[in-house]
Amino acid sequence: MTRNWIRLDNVNLHYSAVAFKERSLKAMLAGAFAAPNAKPVVHDIHALKNISVEIAPGERVGLLGHNGAGKSTFLKMVAGLYPISSGSRQVEGTVRSLFDLSLGFEPDATGRENILYRGLLLGQTPKFMRSVEEQIVAFADIGEFIDYPIKTYSAGMQVRLAFAISTMVGGDILLLDEVIGAGDVTFMRRAKARITKLIEASEILILATHDFDSLRDICDRVIVLHHGEVKFDGAAGAAIKEYGRLTGVNA
Image 1 (cartoon, rainbow, N blue to C red):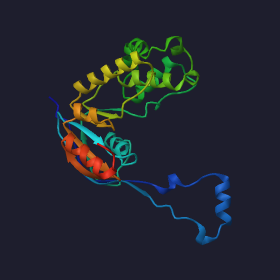
Image 2 (image 1 turned 30 degrees about the vertical axis):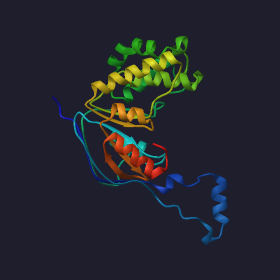
Image 3 (image 1 turned 90 degrees about the vertical axis):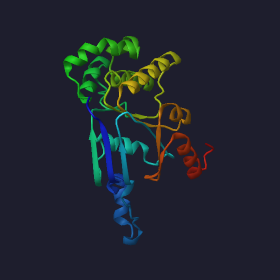
């Protein structure tokens, strides 16, 4: 059996301040005529700070923290979407992530065409995507809209189709960002059942959520992030208490 693992050693991740500066013509003109000492200094954002974590095969790990604590950034860093500024990131195994569900959709292309496009982004072959197309269409359950351009879809329909595509193939390492809400009760029941199967089939799970019940039920270990730092790493019950102490949330 393939041994899958994650090893993070003193990882730091910064967002460049350039990404947060105003780029409009109005802002540029205002800046040009402002006094030199009136321009605010925009510093890089230190999103993850000295993160050292090891996750072994079989572990179900939760991420808990306030909004902006770094949970989503942590997941995207593990997935390799965000480059680290320093330290070491080692990930062994096939990563499947469930976040940014709108990624890969071409608004002028039909739902069927987007099944292929998104599948290619997920690393699948055209042959494989054609073989599972009807299963995806049936699961998304958006009727005749599957042959209409994505730009005609409601937000909920887009999420349903994206979810159906993204969850068709599992991975050794599964990254989940919160619970996905899309559609009626029947669809959500099917979505929950599919996520459960993906979790069971994965060797490593990292789940970012504020749902204490999910953390207790699914995760045998919870990492508490606070302003980009690991403040606790241990059992779910103790982690929830520490989160409550740090944030003042009744846990």
